[in-house]
Amino acid sequence: LAKTTQPISMDSYEGQEVNITCSHNNIATNDYITWYQQFPSQGPRFIIQGYKTKVTNEVASLFIPADRKSSTLSLPRVSLSDTAVYYCLVVLVGSNYKLTFGKGTLLTVNP
Amino acid sequence: DTGVSQDPRHKITKRGQNVTFRCDPISEHNRLYWYRQTLGQGPEFLTYFQNEAQLEKSRLLSDRFSAERPKGSFSTLEIQRTEQGDSAMYLCASSLLSYDEQFFGPGTRLTVL
Image 1 (cartoon, chains in turn green, brown):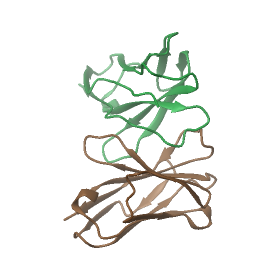
Image 2 (cartoon, chains in turn purple, blue):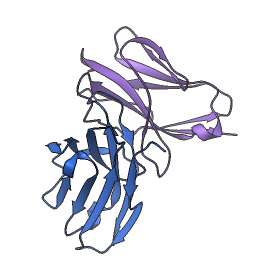
Image 3 (tube, rainbow over the protein chains, first blue to last red):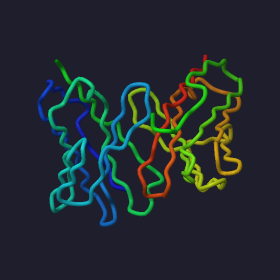
């Protein structure tokens, strides 16, 4: 399974757009890119998943370039409650059962 | 609230004692997963059930660990002869299909003294 690399931490301010980039140079053809969010003392929560180009839902957007070696999670107009750890995962299509988490990116949103 | 519940939320035990955790998944989900998370790290996969069948166990799951899912509903994770290195957050997740998003419970925080 492809290894992912993302920044350990990021700082932002309320109302700003935040972009968290993840690199996955060894991603395979059948792999999807998935992002989870985790607040302290809670389990991770699925945010978004995509294969290529752009995916958008009510929470975030996911941008994946044509070579798929990286991806960017975009959080529009963050608030204090978006302070959390964000994990980028590569998951094998049809076999999502074994999620492999890295250390994630701790996003701190300041007032 | 994701619909996945875990009990207890916190457990403090002495080294050498046995502990058991319970997970109740979303009722229609037939896939159930256990993960372990230590401070500053992401969750690590421990084991996976499809209905009542345990299909995979990680090498992290030593012979002191056992998990069951009788009747394909709730699941239990037992740790025998606990060690200080077992201190962690134990997370349970469930999904409807193997490639669906996993819904995580709040976790059980284990502290071994």
